[in-house]
Length: 233
Picture 1 (tube, rainbow, N blue to C red):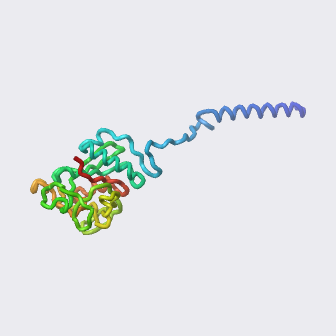
Picture 2: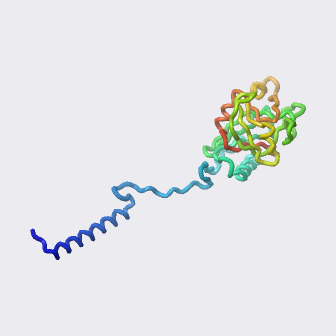
Picture 3: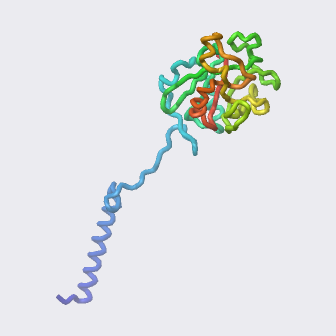
């Protein structure tokens, strides 16, 4: 069939109009071109920080075994230092409890679980070795435990084997790095000591856990997380 110039122009115009309508229908489809669902904008979880995990609302199981006042104080410290620490896991040390009790709470704020280990305090905090922490100190040479929020730092091998440096974030423990206050393993912090002596041995101010339990503490905390140590009535 032969087309005149006029018929050709009319046909071309009609084709263009139909193509535009089809394209508009495709672009307005929720599945996009080719039936593939397009990427949707991602909304960050509440409390998310760039490069860090968001903290989900704490489940009741998280608080299990942790004194409510101490837990609240630890969460306040987590908020206070949120620019320096990750918010998915935390360590909470309850120094109102005896060393015969498991008092280092390893809290998974996202998963909603808590496990607890024994931990020793410094000899300067318990001069008569009663098993109870009597006082805190931030002074060099005191051999005492310091209270406050700590940032877990790098690992190293020292006289206690594999250890982890701690950075004190508060005025009450800001000498921790200079005092070499660290997490390390120790034979005197093994739970088996309690059956014999009724308490753990004492450190020189460090957070010492049993050698057999050290990896559990390290696996939970890693670097860049908060440990909050306090004695809350």
